[in-house]
Image (cartoon, rainbow, N blue to C red; front, top):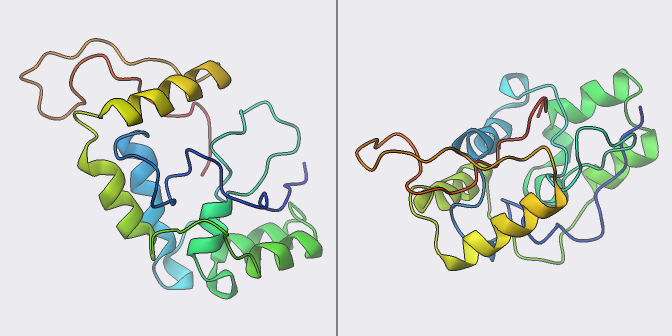
Length: 168
């Protein structure tokens, strides 16, 4: 399977975009973002695939927000994917040289902090984004009703946008 380079612009629900509402993605998804901020040798060896691609896509695309936020010259995932022929040299160069036309957070940590801020009580804009994602992505399932006294989980019946069987 060959992974495609990022789209010309990060998708409308990209967790790296500064204009995406807080609380859209799961805590587990937000926890992945800062892992690419550290020194190369401490980073995950897997590419960060766009959330809009389902697990059965035969040609997934690298997340534009991820490519635009992180320094491609220092991404372990980029080096590993190239060495394992998961991407072409042209795709590696496109990731390394990617510039987003949409404002992005300066780091994965900033994006994660923003995303988690309203995760327990997403606002109307976040809920609209979540509803659209659930319609597009059949493997994304709504979470069960959570008791109000459970402070570890989102309140209400907010969709749990954790992707099933995704490596990134």
